[in-house]
Length: 228
Image 1: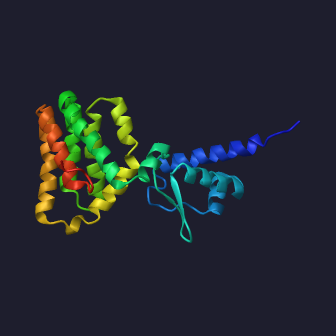
Image 2: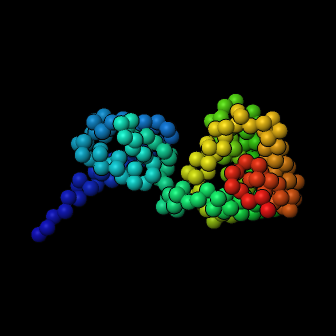
Image 3: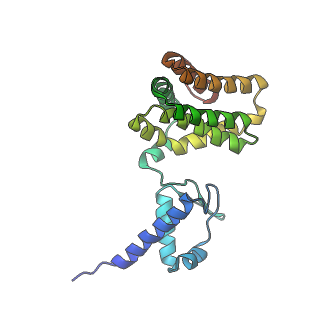
């Protein structure tokens, strides 16, 4: 009778789940380097080979990334879907076109369906965006703003599809806002006004205006977004 090593496989799965849980809870935030193989084995109470396999599993899931000579770093708080990985590898122009479609429709639907609670969420994110004192704060507030607009559509499929762009949106935002300090004053004002106008259109329940402004927001801040 051939006996498979179920116990070892089970340990790897359990260790992977525990590491994933710790990452999701912020024990090691995105960008942080996790402990080395030996330290992880000690923390988890397993052998080094088990901790090594658990780390490899999270690298395969897109939560961790190994950098030669530097260690292993957290790149996502949650496992990255196969769709998200494919999106990350896609042409930036293709991604911009699809995001434009989603953002414009999200703005239109949000203006139709938003609740008072939705408006409060969008407003809080907008205020945080306007008062951000660092690039990191600006990125977080901007991502929350757009996610809140999408959530206000109350379309679960649209929300799920938008969430599949999470990793790519963050990477794009980091690239866009990394040069924020070099933006001209006119560009900054145009970007801030476009976001404020989008909130206003959604608040007053004007779907046509919300769709038009959502397009303007994308043209202002997303490289590669179609202008026509």
